[in-house]
Amino acid sequence: MKKIPLLGLLVVLNISCSTQKISKENSDPTKYMKTITADELKTHLYIVASDEMEGRETGSAGQKKAGVYLIDQYKKNEVAFPTGASGYYQKIPAAFLNAKHNENLSDSENIWAYIEGSEKPNEVLVISAHYDHVGTKNGEIYNGADDDGSGTVALLEIAQAFQIAKKEGHGPKRSVLFLHVTGEEHGLHGSRYYSENPLFPLANTITDINIDMIGRRDEAHISSNNYVYVIGANRLSTDLDKICTKANATYTNLDLDYKYNDPKDPNHFYERSDHYNFAKNGVPSVFLFNGVHADYHKPTDSPDKIEYDALTKRAQFAFVTAWELANRRERPVVDKK
Image (cartoon, rainbow, N blue to C red; front, side, top):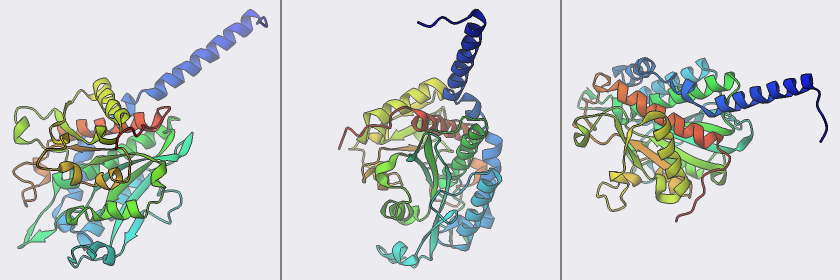
């Protein structure tokens, strides 16, 4: 073994300690998790779910206006559109949206933003939420604050947290695609379009974290909003289920409720949101959900009824789960059919 002079030894030890310190900081998302705040979520949601957006019906002027707001926020936070795309829109023709049910929907768009991975850029984590709702009925605006304004604004905050980390030298090792899908209310059309026309191969897509309704509580949790339903995490991958559980135990300490994960559950929520179009193509997927409530699909689903403390904590849970997925050594193994 080569002998190292004392001064050289001290320098080497100092460098080694510094490297270990950086590595440890990079593995801890707490600082960036805390950038997801109730105030910012509330500011975004009062805009996305305002009367000005006219209920965000698929392809409507109101939905397109909401889309412009989302893109403006990504530009403000310096989160670019994906590599290989020509802009923030994935355009979806009316013919595709109307092919199954012929509901006379107009052309619409998925919206995507992207942070490229530093070490494994070709492996992609998708975080999704639908930004459409049901529009206006009988002169009343259905604002869709919880469904799914809550997931929509959570994506904005999660992207901002990842971008802040990147600017400080702690960007994700894998690429992260923030995907706002359209047409969910009419049959998961936007996520189906993406799954059939993926920008990044589904074989390279390691997981979809789908966020649909995380701003309220249901009757089963009337005494506390410190919970979230976790649906689908273990359907394809034991790894993904363990990652969700560990991330929560380490950082957020929510009560993880698996009631609706039961394949025999009559609600079949697993098949009813956008993660399903990833899962049915073999991509490990998890759906975060607060359950239904009295204002579900009613004009009374308004931003003043959102519990912003719960929305914040659930968005933070999604972020720390995403952080682990984007930075761990191996992607989740698909070990189930």
